[in-house]
Structures are given as C-alpha cells and as structure tokens.
Image 1 (cartoon, rainbow, N blue to C red):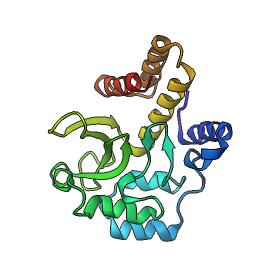
Image 2: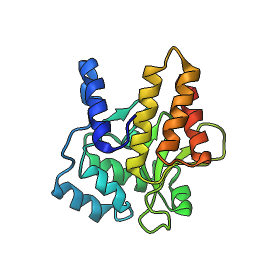
Image 3: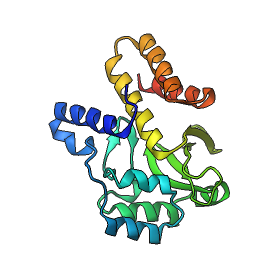
Amino acid sequence: MITNLDELVSFLENIAAKFPIIASEIKLCSPGYSDEILVKLRQKAPYLPDSYFDVIKKVKIAGISIGQLNLWPVPYGKKDFVTSIIEANTSSDNPFLDFYRDKNLVEVARLEANIICLSSKSSKTSGYAYLVDISSGPNLILKMLANSFEQLLIIAGNLYDISLSYENNEEVGMNEFKTRLAQLGVDSNTSATWQELLEEFF
C-alpha cells in the first residue's frame, strides 16, 4: 500500500525501471521545481492553493502520468510547466473557464478525457481535488476525489498498483482497493467514485 509521497516516488521508480523506454513519463523526479519557477507561478497564478505548491516543491509533475492520471493540463503542452497551468485557466480556447469561475476551481491535470481541478486558494475547501466529467453527457459533472493534490496522487498510485497487481483477479483487487481507501481516510461517496474508476481500468 502507498501511504505517502515518498512511497509513491519509490513505487513509480520501480515501475519506470520495468519500462525504460517511457521511464521519463512515469518517474517523479525529486526535488521539485526551483524557487524561481515557484515564485513565477505564484505571481501568474495566485489562485493556486498552497497545498499544490507543497507537492511541486518536492517533485516535478509536468509530462508525468500515474496510470491514466496525467499530472498536468495535457492540452496546453508540457514543455513549459508554468505556461501549461496558466493557459489552462485563462486561455479562451478552454470552453470550461466560466464553469471554473462559478465553482471556484483551478484546472491542474487530466484523467483520460476528463479534467482534474482543485478548489482555488480563496475557496473554503481550498486544495480539494475534483473530477470534472466532461465525457458522460452535455452537462458537466463534478465529483470529489481527494482533500488535497497530494492525497489525489497517493490514491491514484494505489489505483495504478491495484490495476497492475490484480489484473487477473479483479474481484480481489476491488476489495483490496476499497480497504486501502478506507485506511487512507477516504469517505464513502469519494470511495465509490474511485472504485468506479478502477472498474473502468480493469
């Protein structure tokens, strides 16, 4: 079981070693972004919650995926991390900006075709992570995933581990994942969302 960011880094290092051709897209490199980049991002994206910066100080996330979870706003490129975040939340090319403003959300990542947002710094639930389901129908559906960006990554790491380890025994894998979610303190509604995601990945 993966319970913290250090364990997630070790887990992904082991996975990367098995797939050297795509290792650079799997491995979370530490330390994270430089003070210069962090200052620039805070200036240009003051709406980002502090808990997000806690993670990117420790690990670099642009271009990295944990299973199906892409840790940056994919449509806006990955060469320049700061530009990717800013454009995702300001570019007129993004049709969901009004929704973000109404819900006090910041786009930070992608889960397959869907969007991952955090509650903005000014929100009462600052840093909470949500899935914005844009693929199930014309109306956007918001589902809570975690109480922080770090918890989001840790849960995603466990989902990835389960999907790899129990590929041939899905029922046991589902039960193990449910147990892990409970140990991580995930509430029943959020747990149900994650279990639905695992079912899709099996």
